[in-house]
Length: 240
Image 1 (tube, rainbow, N blue to C red):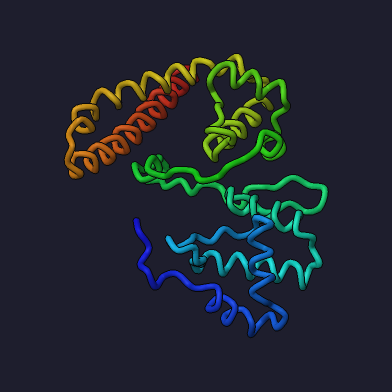
Image 2 (image 1 turned 90 degrees about the horizontal axis):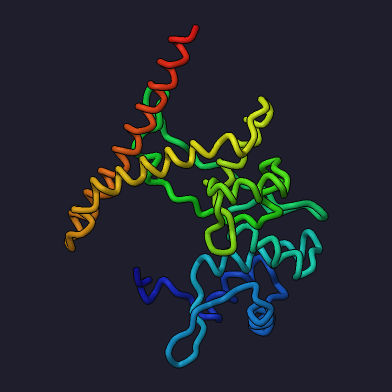
């Protein structure tokens, strides 16, 4: 969605907003921080910089980290990268950690349809995934081989972290990744069934049909989890 023209600030306006807290700030310093890749303001067709409020907040973070924590620009840049990927910046010598886990909505203890509309914006490196899940490299390779975990582009998302954590906890009961292939197969069959139902809606071009398809997808996904939980619960009750 296009941002209204006056949602942008000129470099002079940014300078004026920062000068009250940072008396030594100059246009040259703002340009230098841009050249170092710490901010990336957009440009007008004629080449003038256009700053958003996010750019302004980013500049404040950089200037505070320099002034109050004496952090070098490389460390500040790494911290900003972690924040951009939904992580808590790492302490020196440590690995960045997730700032928060995905909030899963429930109804009467079951996953609500709204939970399936959430998209994880978290982006973890391979080392970060291993560090935060407790998996080792061999386990991760095995899970990837079974299709239980896969990167999105160059990173792993919050869903991959949730799977990795669950596998780690199940490992405490002697359950190994190879034992979990049936979970992937079952999930793929459920996904296939949902796609069969919503495909006629997704093929329609109007926005109402697409919105309806998203709602149906979330509803059936929630019902499939409820059915699975009931079947497992019922099966366990019968063997007691």
